[in-house]
Image (cartoon, rainbow, N blue to C red; front, side):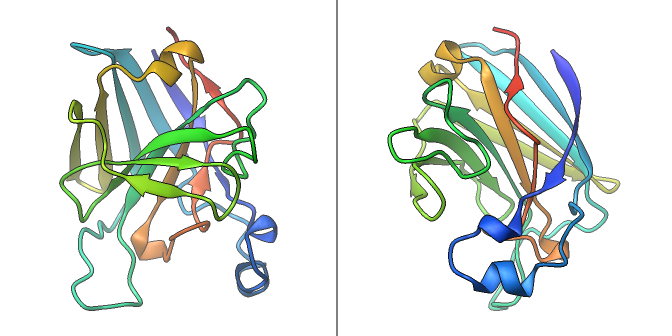
Length: 182
């Protein structure tokens, strides 16, 4: 399955605390307008590739605290009515895989609403391959068995462009859950 996804800016007005909503109220356009999503069976589980335009790759920060790395995440709902834009809700969690350009390994995360994200090491069989070539990122997530994705074949995508100062809730996202072929 291959789809072109139109992305939206994550709504700043719903971010926890007042700072982001106030400081970034004028952020109305996504830093990444579209991405290509490819989902195919892997050796065990699924292979998900997300590709997008990124004129300047940010792979490391060094000691600079005012810079941010490129990243991408896949989120899967735990229940049919799990909201995506709020990172789930109490009793309606989501889980996901997070790639950051400054890490060789994925992170797994769980959330039940804004500000509740918990990161942990991924299962041993989760792998990632990321390549930046000629102004484009291509990130391949090899997610051998991911029961949630098998139970509910839909996901949401989030992308952060470090050069655009994306971080935390400042990101480009799919406008809803994307149904993927089983």
